[in-house]
Length: 174
Image (cartoon, rainbow, N blue to C red; front, side, top):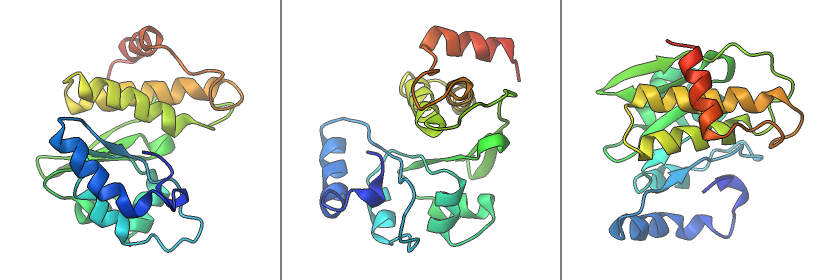
């Protein structure tokens, strides 16, 4: 689910929808999108208890957690179920792994337009994570998809396919 704060009619039932998906053996992910009211409503935190993956950007993460410190924000939003992955733009991405903050750097690229880069990151990360890749590899594939998507104008013109993203990752070894 994406754009949580814009989905006013979906929000009240999303937690139960995610719980049902879990019972059916499905994996759920949630990208909150920006909250135009900037209230960062607490109902999202309740919904997170049923989500498998939470994918906020840095602004969303800080707003929801009520702190400007990314590491502390990850800790505040942590629960036993949800993998929170913070998209940090030029700073890369971060998540908690074994109680510690784990970061990967962004790939160097000359961005033309960042529209859709977060969505492209989500696609790459989720593809690798669902395939059972270690979190570092999933973060790197997500980062590659996000970075490569910024090469052209608009949100979809430069999205890479899987082969291109994997080749890009191999060409930029950690």
